[in-house]
Amino acid sequence: MTHIKALKEKLQFTGWLQYILTAVLATVVLFVALIIWALINLIVAAPIFFLAIILYVDVVIEIITIKFKFRMKEALPKRNDGLNLFDLMRARHSCRSFQLRKMRNEDYDELINHVQLELNQVNMNSDVKDRIRFEYVSEPLTVWPVVNASEFIVAIAPKEYSRNAVINVGRSLQKIVMHATRMGVATCWIGPGADQTSITKQMGQRFDKNRDHIVCVCAVGYASKYIPLSIRLMSKSQKHRLPISDLFFKNNQLTEPLKIDEKEFQNFGRCYEICQWSPSSFNAQPTRAVVNISDSNEVIVNFYCTTKSRFYGPLALGIWCGNWEMGCEALGIQGNVFYNFYYSSDVEGEQMVPQYDVSWKSDKIWKVND
Image (cartoon, rainbow, N blue to C red; front, side):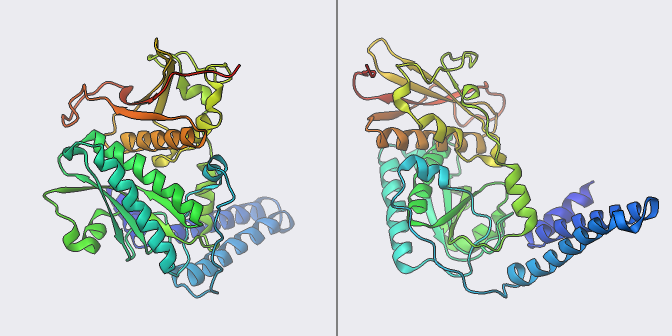
């Protein structure tokens, strides 16, 4: 089993696994066709033989056009300035294959300026131990399952563990991702699929192993239509999302679903939806929210993490929080984020789940629609 895992990782990080998976599928289909031919007849087996041939041809074409990059130059994407925030968030998908060209200078400048804007904002309101960095890398990194990505934003938190810093990464980088989507620039969050050694090598002196911890990377660039079949199938299998009734609640025990169509909560409109469709590692959806109205008529949204993961759980929670903030801002609802400081964020071992991490609170007396 150990040898199989080692072989998988080698194929994965040398960029061959996605093509071998399709070749294995083609071989399985061919084997099924041979069995049907032997047990029944060639006429019945013929369509399955044909499917196997198509899959083998597809593998060859993919290796030529994607792995070895012999292909036509692709058109630049259009901007998405005409979409409102909620439609923009639903239009955004993780990009698994990128064009061979780098971002244009004007796109690079706009994106990096927005990166700096978000960094300044989140770090200005954070303790020193919770401050984060984003570094741009313009070299291919060893990542899976993304192909031909050559530009990345590397998210770095302090080496001494800070849960709030990880949440800050999620909040800020998600806002950067949405600005990139507005620009027509494709993105892909990469956590477990990134090889840390290749990242630190490309970063050089910008990474200090005694001070820094790489939380995740985000591939950026222009989306390509050349996508390996195995990755297409994998992406389709990850489209499922839990219903909103399994994600938003009225009580801290997460047992009473929030009725989002009630007068007090319907003003938030599609904010629930964009949290529901937030990205998370393997689409695990480890975040939940409790929505209530305080005695002073302020809306308070408490965000909980349902996994003991020290990085990908709070990272996903930060993404949720960022989406909620952006959604409320788009609706003209003002509020602020408050962190839970009543736990020891640097202690490993057992922790309570669900873990309460962050609250969003409206900054004025709440008035519901008549």
